[in-house]
Amino acid sequence: MATMQRMQTTGLELFYAQGYYNTSVDDILKRLDLSKGAFYYHFESKEDFFVQIIQNLLARKVYSMLIEPIEGHDNPLTLITKCFDDAMETAVHNEMDYGFILSNFLSEFNGKNDVIMKHLNEIVTVWEVNLVTTLQKGKFNGYLDRHVDCEAAATFLMSSYFGVRTLMTSSAPAAKKYRFMSQLKQYFKSIEAKVITS
Amino acid sequence: MATMQRMQTTGLELFYAQGYYNTSVDDILKRLDLSKGAFYYHFESKEDFFVQIIQNLLARKVYSMLIEPIEGHDNPLTLITKCFDDAMETAVHNEMDYGFILSNFLSEFNGKNDVIMKHLNEIVTVWEVNLVTTLQKGKFNGYLDRHVDCEAAATFLMSSYFGVRTLMTSSAPAAKKYRFMSQLKQYFKSIEAKVITS
DNA sequence: GGTAAAACTGACCATGTGGTCTTTTTATAG
DNA sequence: CTATAAAAAGACCACATGGTCAGTTTTACC
Image (cartoon, rainbow over all chains, first blue to last red; front, side, top):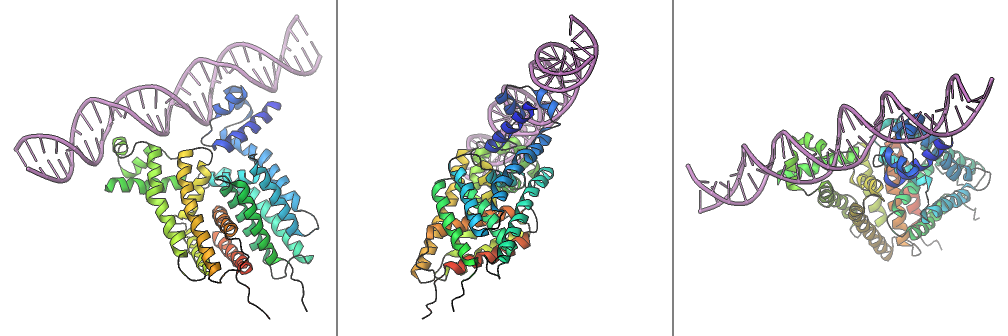
């Protein structure tokens, strides 16, 4: 039990740092001082191992970082701003950011492993559905302009978030974050409910 | 000469489709009906091979797809809209989109291969510098609101473009493109020069 | 036709990979 | 203490990988 969890945690760390195909089962085992036997006692294969990591670690973390924080009846634009800000802050400090891990793995497995892609896309879909719902509710509650296309806004938000996380890796993450957030607010201003000036 | 080019073209195709670490030199050679000797006669190593692909193919294509089209004295927002639209259109039709390839490789090599990352980041920087310049010129020419932070806008544009390309791979690329473009225009409306209503 | 360099062949090597299997250790319950 | 099963060890295998190298073919030029 404890061993299984240690394996998954360490596995995710290494897969994230070096990529899935670039990390061998032995790498993970060496780090944990465990043997091949222990690994294949708990998991059917490397792929099965990774799928379990997705479900047990990645999915849960994405949920608690990107989905839970935007639930509620407040202004969704405020909530999303705060949520993105927090998520990117962990990235600035070089910690593991599960939102980024997700987009990273999406790139790595795209067109290469359908089984794993299916599981990753499930997480993306959950996020998307939740964003759309939140935005629609916000529109209903008068926070968003009534002409806003919520599906489109959700796609745009997810895109920009995934993208900025890719950019932040190369250089000056704090500056990238600041710039990104300023323009996100700019965009939000353009879709928020207009004050009637009569 | 011809062989070298064939190798690079096929190499990029396979690296793009299967990833760098997931594509063996033999894979490329098999496709071209060539031998190991031919490969190592032309290139020092697999890494050297890839670096040359970046410089000879990727950099040039990114330039002609994402940089050249936004040069000129017209409204930069119009030019960028058209440019993104064109770039994403090739992606909808499952062709190789070099903008996407770039962000894809950025993900694959991030933290794994510094030499290759350096070359990829060079391309990103060129794009960024060009975007910033174009936006600043647009501001000077009265197309953009004078309060716009051009560095921030460039970061935001690059982010959203990279991100949407990741999202488009999973499902319904045409719909994703449409939604993305609609919100991009929305964002552009919020940073364009305001008409004086007095 | 001769010759020298360029282009290419393919067998070979060391190393690393995911995965198997038998054996041993460890924990648990009667 | 012992029987039993869970957990872990680690030697082993077949195969793939990046890379080397001595040798052969092709090309271009005098």
